[in-house]
Amino acid sequence: MIVLTVLGYILLGIGILLAVIILIPYDYCIAGEKIDESEVNVLISWLFGGIKLNFRKRSHLKAELVLTLLGLKRKIETRSKSKSSNVSKKAADSINYAKSVKDKDKDKHKSYFRKYLKKEIIIKILSVVRKIIKHCLPRKLSVNGKYGFDDPSYTGLMCAITHQFCWLFDKYDIDIHPVFDEEMLEGRFLISGRIWLPYLILVMIGFLITQPIRNIVITQLNSK
Image 1 (spheres, helix red, strand yellow):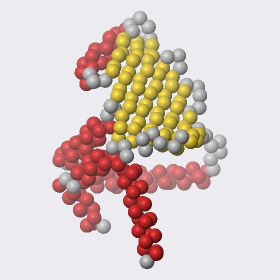
Image 2 (cartoon, helix red, strand yellow):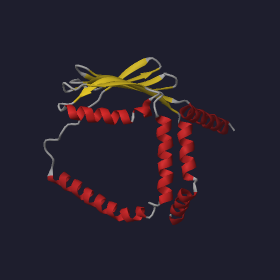
Image 3 (spheres, rainbow, N blue to C red):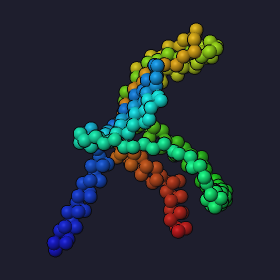
Image 4 (cartoon, rainbow, N blue to C red):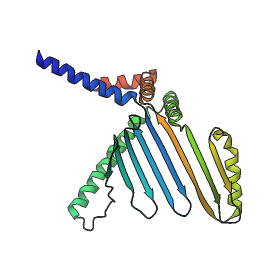
């Protein structure tokens, strides 16, 4: 009886934890600037700011990654990839063999997945991608900068292209000016938004239960 009670509390705790992870939204903020030097900051926060992950990269400096947990900060070391000076022939042969096997397996399954590339399936996939992108679009977008090419005609062409699509960003704070007498690229930007996992889960469930996708899933399960 005691074991069942303890097990019940454990399952209840796991359920509450999963509910918290799913229901509490994730906020993101990306900011950067390029004047004399370039700098990029990426901040992901959860639990209403109780947990934060901050990535910062400045030109000519090592990237920084800081985790903040309920006010306590911990710097996470970022290691740069080092090139191995001596690679044994045996290791190189193993890598080449694994690559050849992977290529053969890829060619084998290429024709297998082609039969699923039907019009109705592609339409469903594009619809899901559109919904996910729309949900992840930033609530706030601010861009302020100047640009110019060494050839003024390229600057004029870029100016014409950006004016064709400026209506897509009417609700955002976009202020970009072309410079025709010198080559330059400078400015700053800020992007922030919120991601809600329940919506993404519902979108994926709706995608899986649609008829063409459901038929594929059932076929795969029956084949196994």
